Length: 408
Image (cartoon, rainbow, N blue to C red; front, side):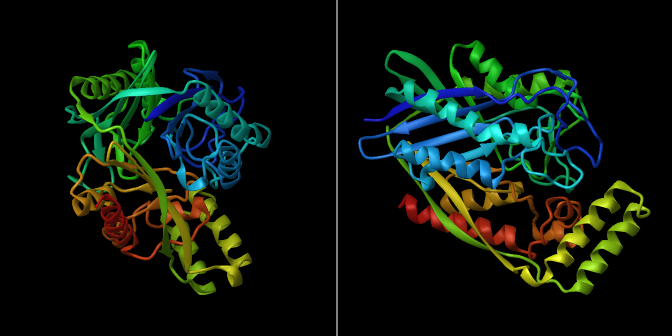
């Protein structure tokens, strides 16, 4: 038997909190609330295991918040490897982990986020009901609302994917997936879940529980974003999701696999040169982008002897009705998902970004060669070392082959 429960709990921050992303040192304070932010949780249960899928209307999460959620889930007999947490990556929400210049963390608020997510988990546990049917959505969508912002005519994932769980005596649960940066609202001062919130709102109008799972959106932005186009995009996603579906078996598997990320090994001279280059490109030390780079330089030099050229990360996966869902802790590029799908032969797979503690961008080899924003400048604000060229491609390959073995 497969059972499922849905829960949500509000994460909306207090007025006055600085909003995260969309420029450096903007002091962009929340002056109002356009739409609430939520943590949404789906608890899945079979006779032999439990798993959680959680989506938060935030830019990204911190390690400490995720650890609190993992500890709480263990009390409900859900091990960490079966807890998948992602963020919708809205840029009109608060920062939970500080990224230099991109919204200071309100520590009092941030300290409450873990417990608020756990309240959503509690709600999902009390809502458990037998799943009577499981249906899959997998369809292309139309429109010019998104584009690849890193390279002209670059890849864009124009598919809506997801699941509908019909339950005995209770409302359906829908898991919806597409891919786009949460920046339709721009530098707005009103708290908003951006297009993800509108998708969930439209689905809830139809009498179902909805959880939006954002895809690999690192290179995907809204095209000519306006409030009208946000609503158009959300409507297209919802209409495509509900247009057609096919039945799936009532099965569940979940777990994780490790990956060792290779980072660029740097010397003091390398750090100095990178910061000088950034200052020159920015147009002087007084420029915001230069300030970010100089802060990075100071911190990297202070811990130079402790810097490592590798980093161990964990990739979470879930098979719902045999369809893979994989979550990566990056603002990943479209190509990563393409590689996984091509290797596994499962174009219907859900490839999610911004999983758990957000580690920044994972740029492709060609993006690094161009010296583009995701390749270098973004590492300054995330206070990290650049990844080695080819790591995004290698992650896609290894994740694809690991998932293929699980699917056999």
